[in-house]
Length: 243
Image 1 (tube, rainbow, N blue to C red):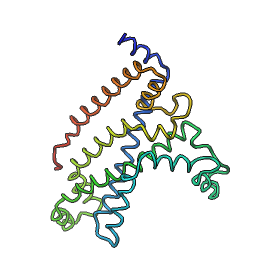
Image 2 (image 1 turned 90 degrees about the vertical axis):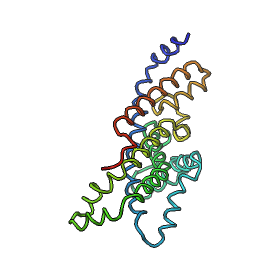
Image 3 (image 1 turned 45 degrees about the vertical axis):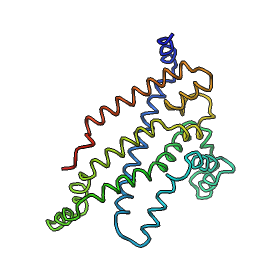
Image 4 (image 1 turned 180 degrees about the horizontal axis):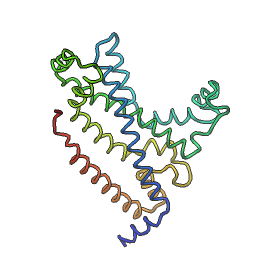
């Protein structure tokens, strides 16, 4: 009976799309989050008036409930009562209200934006901690040698952030892969699987009472995560310090 569960699972024509969408979900969210967090961390690492307040503001998406944040965006994108939809119409971005939460593609994109937003605080503070370990005398020596800000950042600062970056990417990747609330709220009520990832499909099987299929997909999801983590750790070697 066990192997029959996998046979039934792989007979689902939506499964390849779900796996591909899961990879897109993880890669896009993690990549954009890391790039934005690098910029924010670099800004917060500099002294400027009100820096402490700005640092506290950055924590807000992390402190707030993910479901609450997603619900705010979900209703904000509603065609006729959503404040975001009204803003888009009033500014001429769109000509008439659009059902962002009614279309699988737009709902999936909106979910990606929310996931990036709630992932920024952890990643930013992880990288900010890494920036605190970069020796100031090394940066000063590079400037004395005539290195410009861009060259200094990419040749001196960024290599020193190797361990912090590796940890941020790894933990973010695992969290995003296992993320359920955002997509559950944003696209969970839609029929079909056009906005599903592995995690949301697992819970759809549970909702249907197909626990055996859900367990089979959970095992596959676990194997995918373990392979990705093993390859990532082998290639990146998080414990290796920057040169």
